[in-house]
Amino acid sequence: MRCLLLETSDKKRFFTLVGNYKQLQEYCRAFNAKMFIVKADIKKSEMMDIAKLVTALCDKNYMSRKIEFKVLETKKVN
Image (cartoon, rainbow, N blue to C red; front, side, top):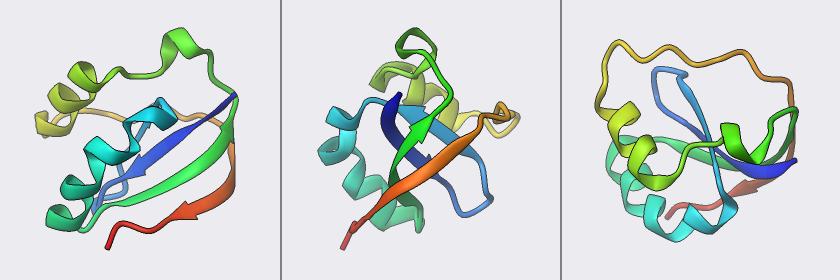
């Protein structure tokens, strides 16, 4: 499935809907995170909505799941 991948500076990965791109731009600028459009082996129901994503980003113990993906596009955040 095509989705948005947010990768933090400590290499944690979060899969969310492409529509969340605009809401996450400021976070990426402030915390030096990267965003990519990817094709991932993930179901829509497994992707994080914006509320779950915010909670996970604030959780220092969050562990990223291993999900196969292919980068389709690197998104600019500046």
